[in-house]
Length: 336
Image 1 (cartoon, rainbow, N blue to C red):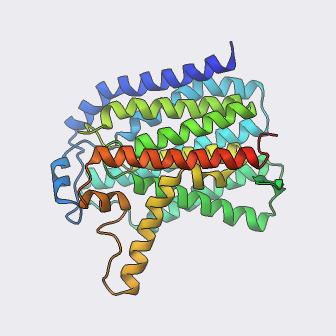
Image 2 (cartoon, rainbow, N blue to C red):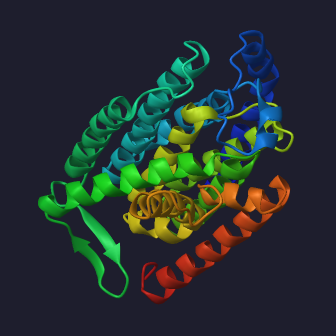
Image 3 (cartoon, rainbow, N blue to C red):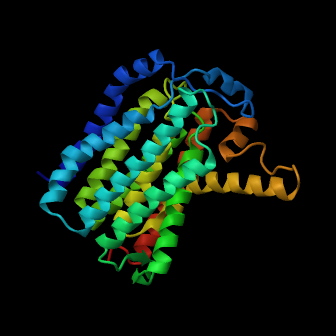
């Protein structure tokens, strides 16, 4: 079967599985009363979201993993190489982050502790996952990891740079994706654009398994959007946001160009940076704020933008970042 047909099927099946699973899982989560608790510091109208089932990220996590197991793993095993090892270890890493998110959500909604895991617990768990994943990549690269740099080509990264750099990319990206999950449909749609970009790049490189995985992520995001668009019937929770963060980083490393997330995930960068800037400015000025609220999508909410407008504008901004990313990849010789 033509690789393009297989890749398209991965997207369609992931969409169908995720959307259909919602008919079972969403009512089940509602019966379990695992509803979201809205913090008092948020926009007042978010109180209307109180009680909406959370942990909905299980929908697309299951959708992606099932498609990868059925549509990607058999081919990857038959043609086992460093590329397959990098890709599948990345999916396992994303699942690990999803489990951390599930643990966090469980504490919030079952134990009724709205803050979930404390920062030390969450950081320790993430560091363990990051360390295991980077070690897997180190061996997949034959202890000579490389990364594409514009106009310089593939450069070999010494261990003393690779591990700190990889850890910084993972930690920053995964948590920035988590920051983007704050209003109905935002993180889902932005991640759909990111998945589309990585699928296209993988296709152009001839990385069929990576393209199929990106397509599965795209389909699962769109399937979840059926349940998460305004007004949301379910919220992805940390289990979903951390899983998505792990997946987009895995795709970045799978094409040997993780830094491209700065552009392919431009909205993630803006969301994460806005939170860091807000906190830093608040501490430096003893209580003053640059934004009405951070992450920045809340600033626009408090400025009078509706959730649908924010989703559309942020997706458009991310598409601009993707176009810039493709220009750099093309002009810099990435596809040569």
